[in-house]
Image (cartoon, rainbow, N blue to C red; front, side, top):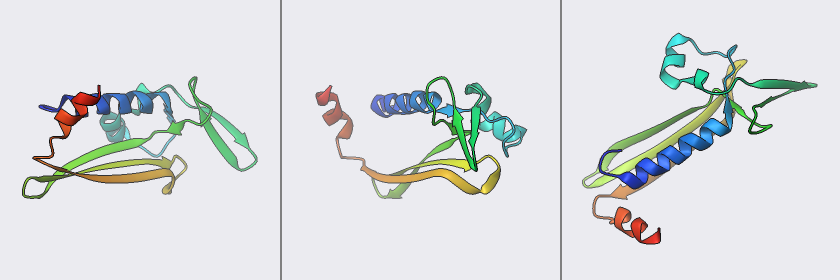
Amino acid sequence: VGGNPYLTEALEEFEHAMQNRSCWYPDGIYDEEDLELYHFDEYEECDIETRGEEVRFSNSFTDEAMPNPIALLYIDDFQHNMRRVTLVFEVPDPDNPERFLYEYTRTGYRHELSNYESETRLLQ
């Protein structure tokens, strides 16, 4: 993120963590356009284990991987000198797009004069 190295670093750490805990489920509900947009095929392919009616996805890092997760970060001008930052993270069920295995949304607000980047630098 131009002009904000701390946000850039945080997003890189998030991406790394997401890569470790995600897997690619090639038989999922997504088409070629989704694959190009979200790069699911860059993840390790899911190992799938079925126990009764429960289906578990795993990879070489974890036994509880997320198949084809989607993470989006929205940044918009909320008020004068105030930005709204919203992280939307969801994992649709590969066999039922109407159901989510996991979904999370978090919104924060950043004022232009908050001095957050300078304060964060002092903590390192």
